[in-house]
Structure formats: C-alpha cells, structure tokens
Length: 497
Image 1 (cartoon, rainbow, N blue to C red):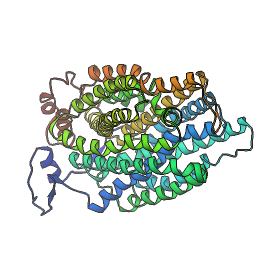
Image 2: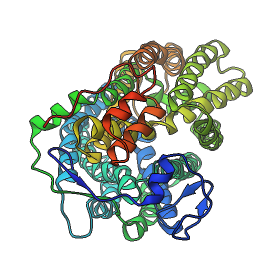
Image 3: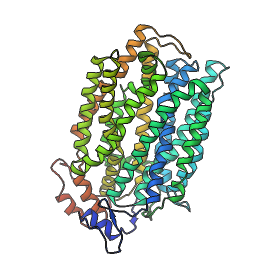
Image 4: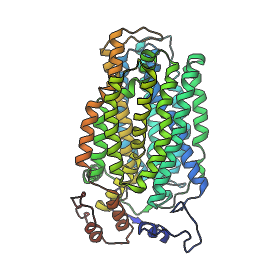
C-alpha cells in the first residue's frame, strides 16, 4: 500500500519488546525465542521462504550467466545481443514500477503478495524454456526477434515473482530481526541454487543441448518455488489506503533519499561492470574450454556460504553500512591485484577469485536489508507503508544493473572483434580484451559508486530502529529524531497532512 494514509494492524507486544532491546527467552504467551529472536512465523514458513530462493536463483543465473553465451553460440553477433538486452530493459523500466503499484493496490482474496508468488511459479519456467528454444535454422534477424520477445516475456514473469517475494517477508513478520533472518535464509538457499547451476549447466549443455538443459533445470526450480505460496501467511497488512497515482510514485521516491542514493550507486557501478557479462567467455577463451566454467563458478560460489555466515555475525556487531563499505573497498583492491596476477598461474588466479568473491558476496547479501531499511524510512517520512514500491525499486535496480552490465559488456566484446558461433576461434587481441573486461574495466565505475555511497548514504541501523519504533507508535516522531545518529545529519521533514 503506497500512498495516502494507512492504518497499520497492531503489532504484538513481543515485537515491541524486541525493538526495545529485550532478550527474554520466554515471552508472556509462552512462545520461545530461538537464537534471541521471537519468531512470529513457523519453521515451515521460514524454510519454504528460503527454499523459494533456490529455484528463483536457478532462473536468474540461467539468464544472467548463460543467456549471452547461448545467443552468441546460436550465431547472433555480440553487438546485436547487447541491443537485445537494451530493448528488454526498456520494457523492464516500464513493468517494474507499474507492477510495484499493482502489488500495493492489490486486494486479492488469498493475500497481497502470495497470489503473485504462486502465479510466477508457473510463468517463469514456461518463459525460460521458450527463451532457450530458439529455432536455429532461421535467419539472424528472426533469431534476434525471437530472443527479444522471449526475453521480455521472461522479464515480465520474473518481475511478478521478484517484487512480491521480498515484500512478503515484511507481511509475514514485523520483527526486524526475524525479517533480516528470513532474508539471510533466502540468501543461503540462493547459494545452493547458484552452486547447482554452476556445476550442472556447463556439464549438461555441451552434451544434451541448451533446450533440454533448461527444461530439466526449470522443472527442478519450479518444485522448490511451489511450497511458499501455500505455507506462508501474511500477518501484517495495511488497510484504508487511497488510490495510487503515478505522480504519487515520483513524490514518494523523491522523499526517500536513502533509497535513491543506494540504488543509484548500484546502477553507476554497473556502467563498466563488464565482468558480469563475460565470465563464461573468460573460462572458455582464457582458461581453455567450457569445462572451466564450473571450476571458475565454484571458485566464486563456495565463498558465498562463508559470506552468508560472516554477514550474519558481522551485522550483529557492526552497522550494515560499515560492513558494506569494507567489502566494497576490498573488492576494488582485489580487482587491481587480479589484473596483475593474470591467469597463466591458474591456482593463484583462483585464490584471488575466491577471496574477491568472499567480500563481494558478503556485501551483496546486505542489499535486500538496505532496501527494507529504506522502506522503513519511507514510512517514517511520508506515513505511507509502501513495501511493494521499495522492493520494486530493488528488483528494478537488480535487473537494470544486470542488463546494463550485460549490454555494455556485449557491445565492448563486439567492438574488440569477438567472433560469434559455437566453437569460433578468437584472436589474441580479443582474448586480451576479454581479460581486461573481466578485471580492470569494472573498477572504473565501481570506484565512483563507492564514493557516492560513502558520502551520500546517511541512514544507519540505530536510526532505522528508532524509525521502526515511531512507525509502530511506541515513541513519538520527535523522540525518534532526537535520538538519530550523528551520521544522519538531516532529519526527515514532517509528513504531509
């Protein structure tokens, strides 16, 4: 529910006690606290919410890691692949915000977010198979049209899942610690999905083909995504909202400065993040063949598990902002080191890859938590609890950054003479540029993004906790403002009457 006034359903007393910092093992209703968290959800809900991410990431990695390789293997030139990515993202720029509005306005019988999650569970597998079932005996132009249309259909289906699944956690529980744990659990199962894709796809597609590989992976992913649509319960919803107008959307975004700065810095980083687009080409042409996709993928995926566990421990002791900035700085420095290490010494190269992946994954895990914090800020500033809007911006940013990186990467690849077609040979000059695109070029915009976030983002965990208490009615807005951190130098303006 985005704009206009909202009546928030009462929070239970145990959630209020958690915000106040109490840590009782048993509350007055006899419910147990597990790991210091008073759970409002049951274990089945939490597991189903987490395992949904396994299937979701299978589909995401199919597109982000392998779509461009599939297209160039199918004979589409790299520059045309980049154009297809850009066309798809023009549509993405339209459907993400609009669907966020639809979610916030929805009044479906079975819930605000759950019906969309259920629908996406069937749409994404169908569109994924369609995308990787391109007819090969046709002209390049027909292939390009097929790929562009199928990609837009897939993108729409993924939007239907990505906005509601993250916002669903905010309606399952209003306990911020429990919400953060749900997101961490989500990331843990994403690690499993990423590991599965990394190992399986490079082994399958050279032997059984792309289409059959995607059919197998799609069925598996769908089965993991089904349970949450029937187990999750929406406990905290909004009522009495007014109709949404597009103008209200822009006014809301203009007031949510942390959300704009955070997502803006991510978009800037994507402008030269060509490594995301050509990692499979590095494995094939720098390391020696498609079998190296799994090796390189494992070197990046295995540290993810450590990153998930590390992030959980770090955010207990440190502000999320501090953790993220340290991870970003380490990632930039390791990128420079990787360029000079080179890939001739494969063992040393893989060590640097794994170390860099550890810091990158720890930072990436925090992204969804920052979005939730920004949504809390938006509620505090405007009086509007528009989770769907905040998370639609997150999913839009994730897909936009992926598309920008993919499109720009393919444009550069085409410009340096990449030859399309399965098994095509590349010149030494092209391979040298593939290496630069993987290591040094991403650091250009990455450094700018780091500086934007360092000097622009002022919201801290202690500020969010105060805003949450004010949003819940436990303390006044004036009391919350009086306790804001020194970093948070600008106090939000009073909400409009």
